[in-house]
Image (tube, rainbow over all chains, first blue to last red; front, top):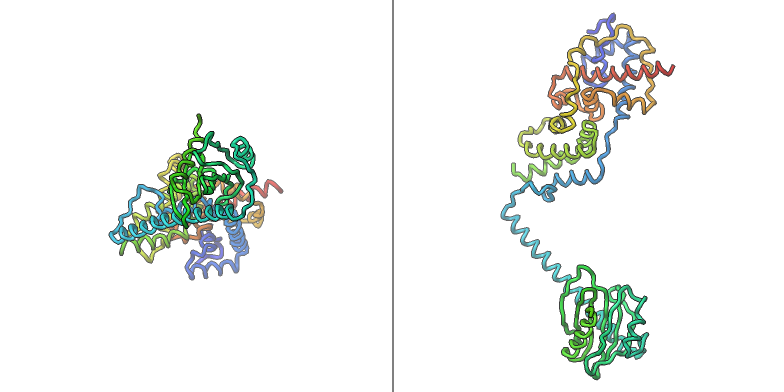
Length: 255
Length: 177
């Protein structure tokens, strides 16, 4: 029981506004407030102060990067710290092996598919050249005419061989796009066959997947230098096409 | 209980508390870098000790206690421990104000900067108890568990923190009148 002559203690005021008094204690306190103006004022003042300090000391916001690191730490499947070792059960090994197989075959499928679609695209372009009958942009058998024509039109440069294999002539060149990348198209005649050679920049992480491929009776020959990727498409016999490609590759190495 | 169930449940309990754990660690250490380290260590300790947590008891208080103990062993806390804190008992000597006047209650609470300054100048132990009570909305019983002190001490620290703030803000009003 709080005496009327007494005022509330500070800790009683705090406990009251924090809802920490038992119902009996709170009842007593309210009875006192009904008769003590000063203590009623203290309660109001304490409540205002609590509301104000709560507002001011709002939570510090976690920076998003820190939150994602902490969340990652909580998830054992993506442990942040390699020091922590999680025991792997036998079924988990099985699942892991299965998912590895899926990933590996997906990568293989994707590479085959990419290479197939590239071959198909180049074959289409080669056939378009054969069937259109229109002349290429630059018509010349002179490498000193063809090579300068490409300068400034492509983000890379290349050399043409001093001498082409016997029976092979340069017909001209054109600009084209291969898989969205700018490319030089060189047109050759080998004997009675036509050959298209596509030159593009080689991307940094590009592998050299296949060197020879046959599609619909055409040979698709891949060759790589440090900076360039060259792909020839022709129905000539593969050995003759290889001679041309070897000459082209050799022309790129500095003398 | 299978380990995977335990860690899933642990994750479920901790995830919603990450913002408050971080915020409290920041208030204690005053550094984002250290706050993250403290929370990381807290999570790791709490996970290891999760078996000892009894369901039905307050998880927030339990993990805040680990957070606080983790902070106490940190560089900042060791450096700060040289600051002497007056005994809580001293507080019991003067808990009532025999003759409060209406002017005593006149505070300027709309001044954000003044309030922040007053909070900043509070002794870290008083600020900590006030944050646990007002921002984290822990009950006195839970705060006692976090700080490992008797509930009476929690009560007197909170009351003392508020009186200190009140006094400081009242002086500011006095100064501006």
